[in-house]
Image 1 (tube, helix red, strand yellow):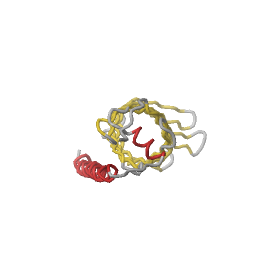
Image 2 (cartoon, helix red, strand yellow):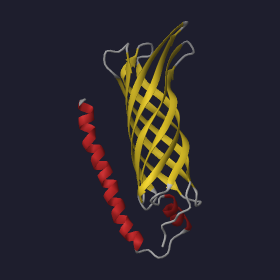
Image 3 (cartoon, helix red, strand yellow):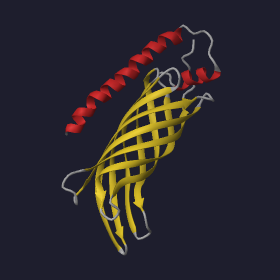
Image 4 (spheres, helix red, strand yellow):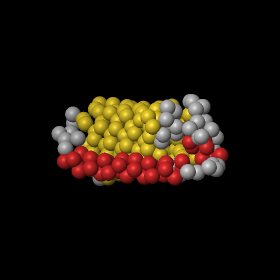
Length: 222
């Protein structure tokens, strides 16, 4: 797909930028003798060998490439939840997976509705910077169902979706084992249904609030 060919270089540059910026900041950190409590908590939670688990919820909107006939609109509202786990292969670089589920909907009246539900999961990679800012790349495969309701007539169709994500967020490391995160997400979504001859694509912009738990006590502070 042409879109994938265009977006792949951007994703590689994005990950390269965060990785190299993080390495440069690690050199500065090694020379720092005094750390705040939050900085110590950050080091504990992002150490090599650390395991992170968590959950969150998000809200956003999606812009579809296909107008909905009964509203002549292609903007939908999204609501979703997620659970995740990850392992730090090196300091501040985590690989893991996640499960997510939710719905996107547009309803101007009680009689006319469009609802798409989804449930799926996939891998993701996250790179932290010293400040607690992080960048993330993700992919998910989801089982989907779209429901059209026009007055008393309802039609349901099952399908699947491919979700490609780029995110940037900030973590607050107020305790040694728990952190709170706010994340801004962009998702490019391909929804495949038999009723469409080509995939139904959409761009999703959302914000996620989540809470993460570190499972190990090991600290890399010397």
